[in-house]
Image (cartoon, rainbow, N blue to C red; front, side, top):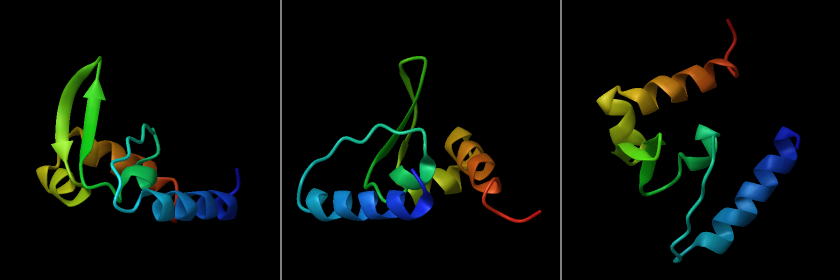
Length: 76
């Protein structure tokens, strides 16, 4: 899926998710960034949980993976 199509799909998802509990499983951190609660699992165990800002502030595994994935979108 190209970037424009992905943006449209997630905007549609956001509109339908309003006022609902939604479980989204994704390896794309940009997809889960908007969540009220993010749970990072490793080997079936909860490694970290919180919202995007709190997880980034913890500077743990979530922040490490988010930064690694975001690097692919930033110029050198």
